[in-house]
Structure formats: C-alpha cells, structure tokens
Length: 623
Image (tube, rainbow, N blue to C red; front, top):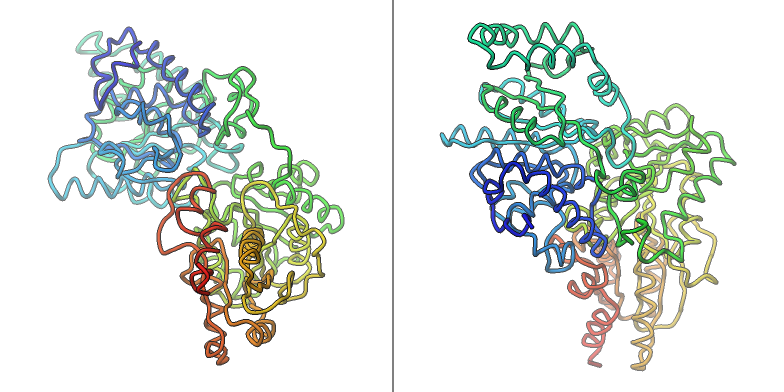
C-alpha cells in the first residue's frame, strides 16, 4: 500500500511515477471509508486528489506554501503531510480540524473556512516573501464557485500589478456547493467549450515542444503573442485582460499535465492562473450524482450513499422551507435570496415553485444584502436566507443599505449558535451581538418549530428590517401548548413563580426547561420566560419581573459580549432595577469555539443544563 509510505511532508516524492494512479485510488478509498464514519466534506476532496498530489510533487513544503480557499478540499493535503492517523477523530472535539489550521501543522499556511479569501491571503504572503527576500513558491487554490465572491476580484485586481511570481490554481469543477450562477460561470463555460483554442494549443503549441531549436523558437514567438491568439478564439480573455497570465485548461486528474503547467507557471514573473478542470465527487458515484448532499456529509452507508442515521424529525431548515412556500403562495410580493445555498438554507422548494421570485446571487453575501435592499425599495418583500457566520460578511450592508433606510428586508438566519464539527469559522455565535447594536432592526429567536413559523410570518408582515435566528439540527417540539400571539417587543412568560427568573432566548428555552427541573428538585422557586425579542427587549416585562425575582438569569447561545444579557443589564442599571435584583449571564465566553459535537461543546463552555444549574445553586448557597 503506497499510502502507508506517506508519513510526512514530501514523502510523496519517493513514490514512483508509475504508482501515482494507484496512490490516488488509495487516497479516495481512504477518504470514502473514513468520512462515511466521521462525516465531513467528501465531494470536494474526491475531486482534488490528483491536483493536491501534483502540488506536493512540485512544491517543497513547508518552505513553499499552499492557501486553500474555504479549505474543505484540504483532506488529501493533510494526508500527504503525515496526518492520516488524525482522520479517526476528524472534526471531533480535540481531534483534527476539517479545515487548514496553522496550529495543527507547519504545512498549513493560512487558516481558512469562508470563501473567496485565498488570493488575498496568498498575495499577502507573496509580498511578505519578497520584502524578507525569501525564496519560496506561493500557491493559492480557489474554486470556480468562490470566484462569484467579490473579494476574489478585488484580490485579482491587486495581483495583476505585481512583478513577482504568484501562482493561482483555479479548480474548476463546474459546481460549488450548489450550481454556479452568474457571469464568471458562463465565462468559464466558454473556455471549456472553446475547441478552436484547445485544438490550436494542443495541435501546435505542445506538439512542437522539444522537436528542434527552430521549433522552440517558434513556440517562444507563440508565447509572446499568446494574448493576441487567445483573444481571437476565447471570449473575453478576462484574466489576461487584467494582466494575469492564463494557462489552461488543464486536466486536473492528469498529474503529468498538472506538473507541466506548474513548472511553466513557476517561470512567470507576475501573477499566473492555472485553470484546472476537475470532477467533484470523482471515484464515488453517489457523490457525483448528489454533490450538495456530499458537500458536508453526515456519516453514510458506503454501498448506497444514504445517511447512516436517517432523520426522523424535521429540522428548523425544513420548517423554514415549508413556511416560505406557504408565504409564496399567499403573497406574490414575497421573494427569496440566497448566496449559493438553496439546499442548505431550505429554499430549494421555493425555487422549484416560484423560479421567477428566487434569486441565487452566488457566494456574495454583501451583494445579497444590498440586492435585497433594492428589491425592498422596489416594493417587494425580500427574505434573505443565510447562515449566521456567513451573514457577518454583509454587516456593513445591513447597516447602510437596509436599516439606515428602514427597508423591510427579512434575514432568516440559519445555523445560529453552536454548529459543531465545522468549528470556529462556522459557529454562529456573534449574530445577536452584531445585529442588536444596529438601530431600527427587529431581532427574534424562536423556542420551537411552531414559533419559527410564526416569527417568519410576523417579520414579513412587520414592514421593518427584521432578523429571525434559529439553530442547526432537529427542531424542538416541546412547549407546543405555549403559542401566544407574537406582539412586537413582548416576551412570553411560560412558568410564572418568583425568586429566580430564567430569561431565555431561542434554543436556550429548551435548556432552561431542563435547568428549571433541576432547581425545582432542590426546592427553589423558578420562573421561565421566553424572551422572543432580543431587539427590542421587553422593558415593561423586565421591570415587573424585578419586583418578584431577586435573580435574573439571562440565557443565550451567543457570545456574552454585546449580547442579550448585557443589554438586559444595561436596561436594569438605567432603570435603577439592579439594586434589588442581581443578574447572571449565561452565554458563550469571549473566545472562539473549536470543532466538536454540540453537546460536548456546551459542556466545555458551561452552557449545558447541568453546568447552568450548578452556577445558580452556588449563587443561592444550595450547592
């Protein structure tokens, strides 16, 4: 087994060239077997095996550096740098990350997790290299889907002006998480299908190489006029028109072709793009047929590709999907926007029913927000479905383009709170803080599946900027009997007693129920209230609650800094309520939360029911 010979970086160079195909097959078999147990990003990694092998054969790691855009295709890179044994605990607490981590290996040049960042980071490393007068090759790998993100174009514009070597690999598999959209996708398609150029290149350029001195001189003349030749047969010549040398397309599953392209790219004094064609999910038919499902796969049965533990209850995304279809049927002004995530956000059904009112803007959250603002200014009712950690990228647009104009855009914020195995870059733990500081926005969080439906409808009908945040995973079906009509800025008391008030937001209402049960067993009198609104906070309720409770425990699955609890304390201080009632904040501490199962993470940071109850009992002298 050739895979066993890979124990550290650069060991692949000891593998004979005749065995490269066998090694690639072994890597794919290893990935399929491992990820079927642990879960993880399968399709993108299966498509990048030979590409990664070629990079490791061409480069000298860790002296040379690779920056992986997003990073979910870096599994082969981790294998080839001696981390194969770490896959047993892939994405588990204390185990190996599913993304590049500088703290994990010297061969990981830059931490990534979000899209369209690799060219910017790579360009920074190039400039650092040159200023320090170092001799190393810098390679940024970016997918065609990531090129729909505006940051990539900003970086390309900057990179076009350098006069030192910088290699950009465009890994073009014709599909990101969902089908690519927009002008760049069409442009790349035109390159793929430009037979004039491909035939010219293959029939003349490469076939003459090395034949004679005269042939080589002719090739050199072709190189000098390459831009002119390409512009005649390839529409746009986007990259070369920017001043970036373009090589390709290259078969990303042919290691010899990849090595030839990389060696040529190293000679370029300036930025150079190697356009590589790969197949997402290569080597595993279910991943080829169902790329969205195998983008971030849960454990699955290898034979069928079906989940090892099929879901038996709906998740919050399913509920959002259903309510969106209902709203779409009732109101022709309702439109939906996603940033390349129709499946992940639950908008696939809406798209199928109302294709003219569905907009996938690509991996471009900033644009998605301002585009939605324009739709709202035009008299429509836009709903932007987005993951919490991805909405961070549109923060400026939320302030300036939506809230400043008081436009009725609704943000349906999925994956809010702890999301688990994807780790720091994907935990949705900041949205309550960064949204609640913005004037003129309404922020809500549902306690269960019925309340999510009610809140989305309420937000759309409100006519103001609004956000509804909800967690990943199975929707809570408890407290069904508590479904009071939603009123603007009003909390929902559930259990009314005295002494201690558990004032919980969204997903933490379920945890508060468990905390209350523990405290009741200790003989304490405990109220539980569903906050519903994080902005505006129910000041009237809070004033009344302080009259009958000596301790208010705020509970949120969000960082404490700037979150719901701090806003409650501010109100209590301003109103003079803090004299008779103390406040305890339960939330996520001032830190980044690593990968691992959500249950374990909650225990580690102390927001599980047992930990919260213990804190309260100590406060009450009952521990």
